[in-house]
Length: 487
Image 1 (tube, rainbow, N blue to C red):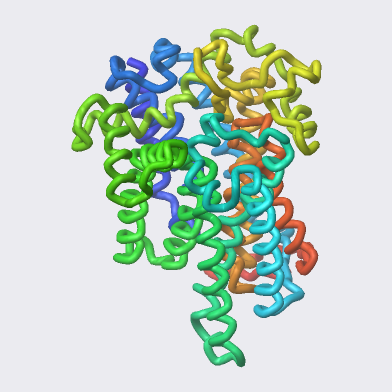
Image 2: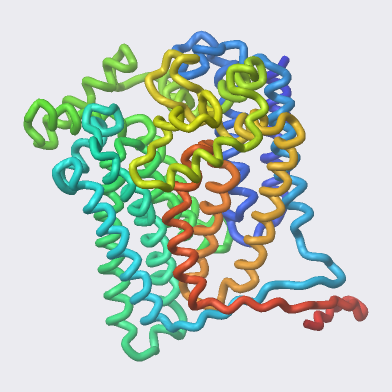
């Protein structure tokens, strides 16, 4: 049975991840394993356990969960990433490493981050003008996502992508506070004022991050606002399975579950109240949200375990469905697309150009997504990275894409890890670069990739102005039971 193959692969990944010894509780490979298993292994297992449920996307292609070819291409993609990570490790005899050195102190870092924060807040404010300001943006996210409210000029939405840097600025500030507030730094002059400034900046950043997340009408941005900081805190306690780590993981899982199941109904309630000019009292919003939940589930909010599981994984079944569709109907997606969607993404850098208007440019008929005329859905659905790689270059590209991704991710992680102690914000950089690496290789929405990169590129380019990178060669000699490293 196909479910047995998925369970065997899941078991291998779990055992391997437990046996190996990562540098921190959540290193790049473990984070990759978590998201990969959720999207490509556990989701099809749940689909196979509950095949008759009303799935969000899989209902349009129920054969996908039984497809051996889909499992094969998923396995091929995983093997590519696994081998890429393995071969990225430094040579045990000789090689070279990158040494990082910052040309700025703590106060200058806070000044730079403050400027970045003001920049993204300004862009968020400009974006909100199309919808009547920041408050209206926050309460109307569902209406914006549904298309009831639109930026008729097509210009204001361009500033939205610059505002997506808010969670990453929050992450860098959190890293700064955690590390600057420990050790000998407490003795430095102006310590209290520096920490107070950092906490004020974090508060401001969190408030505007919440406004932005609500304004998108999507749960993903709520999770992205919180999750990186949680990873940072867990990694800070490097002793595995400590009480603090267990508490943080438990709280995070409960919060992620709540956001996945209940955040959308509350956003619906806010949007409905805004358009009907109703009461924004908490009790009224909660009652309206519960009504949406009951309507969606067909039963009371106190739903059973099966309903909760199906509800959660319905948000992830698009990856397996997309993989099956591009493999079984390649002609519909103009296979092979040979990266033409990435040219569309470059075109989208022009203000006023949106990916839905790309038919004006005679590149190909449809973006490599699950298009509405094929699934009967009202919007484009991201295909996931495996389907995206397959539709652009068949099986070889699935493996090659995974291998290159794993190799580059391993190199980035190792470089940051050996330089982790040079500044109090480096642990934030470690998590920040994971999400950037994940965006580049595993985003799956090729037509949006360039615009989604904007906040990362701005932050990286800004920080690189004060960073010196040098290459140092090393050799390792064994003398008895000791290793001597000459660099």
